Image (cartoon, rainbow, N blue to C red):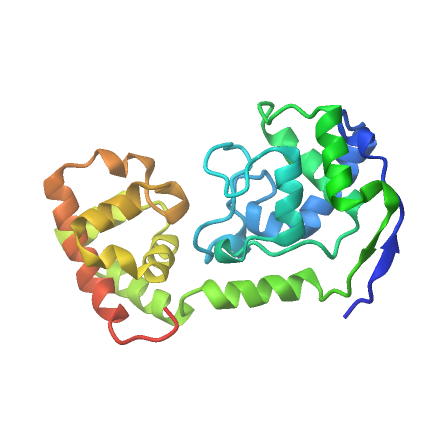
Length: 250
């Protein structure tokens, strides 16, 4: 465990229009702390995030944020984390590193909310950034992410077993499932992590069409017919639904 330290005062005005030096620093920190889940390009497709549900935030999409895409709300997320979403707190990082990281993340989409001097003054007042702060003791981020991933991921052996079964199945239903997915294992992880879809076909449809690509399905899956949905639902139930009954850790 790394011991905490006293962080120096931060001039928050520097982050209203961040310099290239700040953005470069933010990118470096992002690649170390965030890219494994959110992806190097910020699209939420990092390898460590494949087993998380909901999937990691796509920083190019400004809709549906739990805390919001405003600068101060992003800082709140890094400060407190969002445990229910599998988002770890990064309060262990010095404030200037978090500010630089947010500044870099904002480069993924030019439509992030504008930052005003008043916004930064409020942020400063909320977290006493210009007064300096104490960084708490911390465990390595890699260990923290391992714990989160372990908590949320389904058993990989089960994913592999079902994938093997589907791969060797040449029935029309299996071929349809394969044709509607972009990543079978990702689709299986999503389904195994969310047993609620198994309640009925409507729940299944709603689950799939909400961000299908992140769940391993093709974007066009929402356009299939009701008959195809019924066929898909019945097939998925036959290969996955039964494995969830009485299972632990899923």
